[in-house]
Image (cartoon, rainbow, N blue to C red; front, side, top):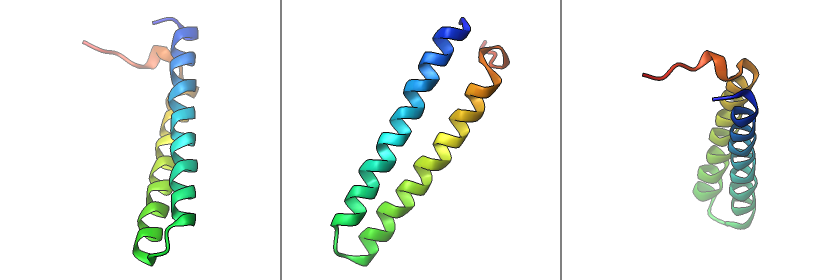
Length: 68
């Protein structure tokens, strides 16, 4: 896969993680039950972790991935 295609895919994937963070944060702000607020806040943290992982993949470039 060429670098441009790889970069485009990673950019979309990262944006999806950011969108999910916003969604879960919005839900957490709207629910009243403390356990639900906590659950959705943990989802935000998980999506942030995914974003960092994908940023690492993007920084390394397409050449570091090898598929059989």
